[in-house]
Amino acid sequence: MQAHSRNFRKSGLTIAFVPTMGFLHEGHLSLMRLGRSLADCLVVSIFVNPTQFGPGEDFESYPRNTEQDRKKVKKEGADILFLPDAAELYPEGFETFVRLDNLPNKLCGLSRPQHFQGVTTIVAKLFNLVQPNVAIFGKKDYQQWIIIRRMVRDLNMDIEVVGGPIVREPDGLAMSSRNSYLEKDQRSKALCLYHALSAGSKAVTAGERNSDTIKQEVIRSISAHEGVNIEYVVLCDPETLENVNQINRPVLMALAVKVGKTRLIDNMLLTPP
Ligand code: PAF
Image (cartoon, rainbow, N blue to C red; front, side, top):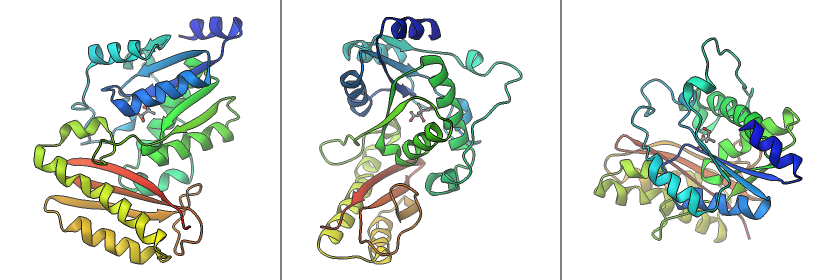
């Protein structure tokens, strides 16, 4: 991979990089298209990274379909599909990790304490292998996007980090590889995330400025669904992820909810008119 990237760069070509864990859907493909539009070459990686899964999480069962993914990546015109394996990326004796002090201790990091260290470590490694000029991450994983941007800034990595908009199903469900875990009735219950975010956004447009009022309404509406459990509802600053009480500027509303055993996240920027 490094040799290919060196060659691209020697020829004066710029590289866009879309890291993924595979089981590709329209959300990933939109990031690839964005990447294509931002650089000369497009590199896509697929690697289900063991270090970002905690004990009891879904590393083993995470959906995988490399053959389908290969076709999709080819159709998007990627120059390279990079499929490293775990033994190569984490050789015996591996002991170096990239960890941020503060941003991971919020939102998803509270229930997944090792997750972001696994993400930043693998992304730093992939950046060293792919040597991209620009890297594209989906904003559905908003906290991940913010953390990667902070890592790149703090470690002076010469990479532009771009966030791609959330891609939704026609009824509003944010696309996610984990949606494939949902049974039919769970799939319709999962819509409560999007409905809650839309209600929050409408409330702000209508003049509501109190975060707690919006939060309480969201908790009430989501809790009405049997088998749906809220992990967090947060209204926070979109850069620092610190809680916000008064909505007098754009505020990120972020949710994590378990529908049965499936953990889903979603978010929306609430912007007062
Ligand atoms: O968002 C993902 O799919 C993963 O967290 C990433 C960025 C590919 C790192 O494993």
